[in-house]
Amino acid sequence: MDLLRHLRYFRAVAEELHFGRAAERLGMAQPPLSRSIRGLEEELGAQLFERSSRGVRLTAAGEVLLAESGELLDRAERVRALVARADRGEHGTLRIGVPPELPGRVLARVLTAFAAEAPGVQVEPRELSTAEQVRLLAEKELDAGLLQHPVELAGLVSEPVTGLPLGVVLPRGSPLAGAGPLPLAALGGSPLVIFPRQAAPGLYDATLNACRAQGYHPPRTVHAGSPEVVMGLVIAGRGVALAHEAVARKEPRVLWRPLDADALEWPVSFVRPAAAPHPAARRLAATATAVLRAEAGERFTGPSGPGGPPGRRPGPETAGPDGAPRPWDVVYAVRRPDGG
Image (cartoon, rainbow, N blue to C red; front, side, top):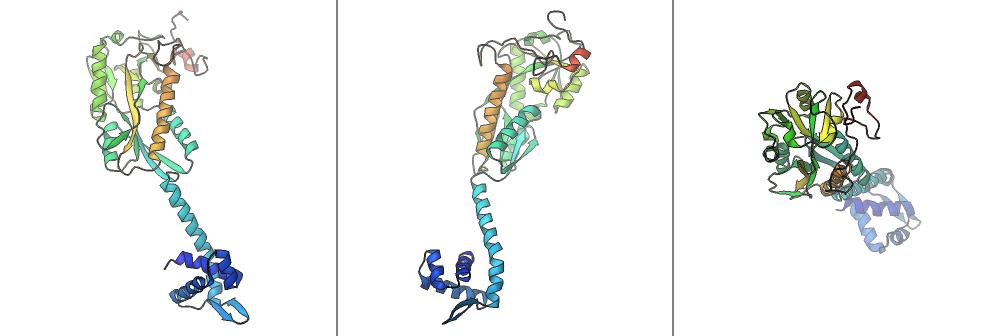
């Protein structure tokens, strides 16, 4: 028995106290309505209406059912609406993976932009390496993830790859302190602080190959799994690091210098399972890709536009977002090209 449908019919009769008017209100003939009420009475084992020549009135059982059925029908409608929203990707929880190297500012922009598009979806980010994300995506423990390339994407669908250009993170007392682009070859024999190879083997190998191809041959690599540890090792003089500009902004004891145009970048993309993905995964991936492209363009675009020669702009070692010197620049007496 379709209980919810029979309850809707019952409430129409109970409110009209007239089978003919109730049938007209429901847009149906009276005989099927009468059969529905009799079937409901048989299902519940109770008489719901007293019928007489003087009309129709509710029994005590009918009064109870009228009082209780309204909330039940309202809840059923709510469940139906929630299920439909979830099917459209407008409700529920979306589990995503992000690498430790992703700047917090970029993650915040992704979450804020997606919240404006799908306010009913709760995004649950987890800090995971690319290798961990690939495994969890295959096991359906993640709905989407930001992966560092190159990586094997069997069973996964990727948004277009976005390259996040890198710069060099140095101690403030380094002889290379200053502003403007820095060639990789200038790093000489400095050790390289980098994430462990098992976190993203393809990117690890590609990064070292690119360094060697441009004249930088690290005598050794020092591994660190989080940006905080990377910064600590750089401050302690254990080596230099390659990172996005925003990663170095939080630490006043280091400075960041951009590399020569197109010197090195870390390609990333949001991916999702090809089979039975979360309905909102594709929308999140597209939104995140737009944010990543905007981030790359805003921070690394010169006067000729994307791909053009780097323009002169205040680096994080000399100025804040508004162009004014940051408080710790005064404390640490930053060296500028003009000698200031």
